Image (cartoon, rainbow, N blue to C red):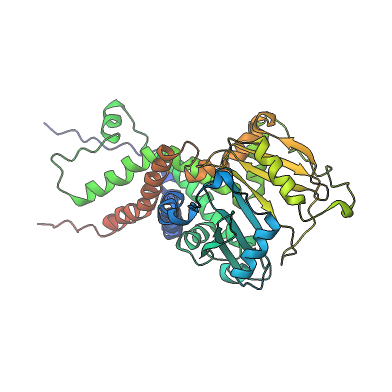
Length: 403
């Protein structure tokens, strides 16, 4: 009797083209995706690392603060400027609600003529200051700091932001296509194949090629949903159309983002005094005693100065993320509160836009989501490596010996 020969069923049109796109795109942008992913993983625990390494200056350790007064902000600014002699003016100050914590003064200049990160930002420094004495506890050069360089590689490959974000954004768009085609290729034909693709079956497997193949497929599948979320929230910063789409979808069809630029300073300039900012600071502290802190712009001219329609203060309610925030508009001459926009006042689209950064870096629910972001980023970094090894292994197949 002749043996029947069963021929493997050819993959369908969708799987054929998914395989081609997955391969071509992977070989084309794999190295870039590796860099974006590994820098994303490195950046995830920035706050946790800095909270440990800077603990001695994040808290000022001033004694008997219940019986002491915080210095007026302009007095403090002058003291800081005299201790840290910089040619640029101080840009803003971060003010914590916790009285045991130091104030943070920032020098930050953006030169729009620079073509790379180091030219584009002449200075980015942070000084931790005892608010009761005005003493500078320590100054950090954030521009050349490890985490900021990692962030800017991730953000723009250290190129000028105006077009560097597109250089990063385009590979991420391609990566999204690769994730979708990867799921199509992974999708099993039947129940038996499905069981095999959800877990590693290495008990009797010795071939490194098979193990590498499983690493690419199984880890890729489990990471794919989170990777899509992190990719889309990253594209939010590269392409305005993505921001618009996210807002429109989650706001239920709203096409206009809330605009408060019509709320402007009306009091005469004569009402502005050295104590105007202190009045604003005290108002914020009294209004949000349970928040984490807020930032105040000190109002100096800068390299990229542009017209500000109003004087806004952003309040950060949580220590570990930015998504729960309030914005307040003040008359910058009289210090009067003109408008408040709290989380309860925001539509769902605004809340999603506000949460985008925290979702992207995994900070949305604190440490648990940061761990997920870290693991997923490492898996995404591994996919170009394991994918290349699959392609190389197939390319270098040993020729079949003939008798």
